[in-house]
Each structure stands twice: as C-alpha cells, then as structure tokens.
Length: 216
Image (cartoon, rainbow, N blue to C red):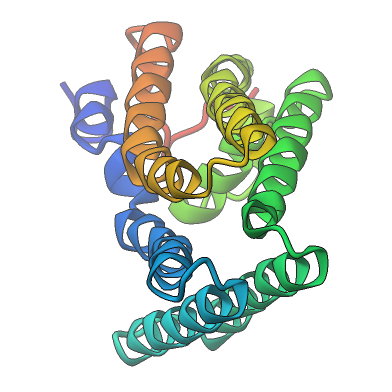
C-alpha cells in the first residue's frame, strides 16, 4: 500500500503520537510524597503538604531541564500547592485529593460535551500534534472515529472519580495515594490502547489515516 495509506498510519500508533508517559508518571509522585510525609510525620498534614510541594517543585525542575515547558511546571506546582492548601485548611488529609476528584469530574464532563457537540477532544489533540489542526472535522470518517474513540477517555475520568470519591468518603488516605498512582499512567496507557483500537475499527479500510484527512 502507498506509504501514506492506512498501513503506515497503523504503524504510527495513537500512543506514539500522544506519548506523555513521563508526565503521567511525574504527576503520581507529589501525592505519594504527601502520603509518605503524612505517615512519617505522625499524620501531620503540614509535613505531608511540605513533602508534596517540595516533590512537585523538584519533579517540575527536572522536567524543565530535560526540555519541558516552564508553563507546565507552574501549572503542576500550582495544583499541588492548591491541594496542600485545601488539606491544611480543612484539617483532613484526604482532602488533599479533592483537586484531583474535581479535575477528573470536569474532564469527564468536558470530553462528553465535546463528543455531543461533534468537537471530540481526541480529534482536537491529535490534530494539533499531527499538524492537521481542524481539517479532520471536514472528513466524516475521521469525525465519526474520533467521536467513538473519545468515549474511553470519558470512561477513564469517570472511573477515577468513582474510585477516588469512594476512598475520599471513607477517609482512606494511604489508599488514595496508591490508587492515584495506579490510575494515572497505567490507566492512561490502557485508555490510549482502547482508543486506538476503536479508531482502527471505525475508519474504513481504504482511509489514508490520521495524518491524511479526506476532505470533500
């Protein structure tokens, strides 16, 4: 088949386009640092908060040194600081994870709305990464495929909300830290794999691929 055909596109998987494993792994470290600091400090929220913020700053600086964007560092550190501030204000260690519960709930809603409005966020992200921008919206096959393949992303956010929410209600601080790590990178990898499978199953066999929208 032609180099730009579907065979070539399938070799270039969704995982290779989106990447992000390092960022997902890094995001798990501050919550784990919070739990570890909280435990070693005799259930001290202040010690856990300090450990989380320090960890967030170190991880962020390492990412910037390796070529990451300073803006991403500021956002990630700001979220850790906000989570620590909430826990300190309420006096409940489990409230450190409220920010993550809210962000995942908001993400689930945003992705679901984007699908209903026929602006699936998976298409928006892949379009930016591949340089196709919004040309994929003029391709009915790609539009339909991105809509179907965006639902696994909604599912992963809902799963996190359900798991984190249940553990938060139960006050399970340690388990929240553990599940925060377990449901970050591993779940993201699974989500990307399922989305890629849906894309391949949905696109016609003769479609030229994600980088080659067919426009009328």
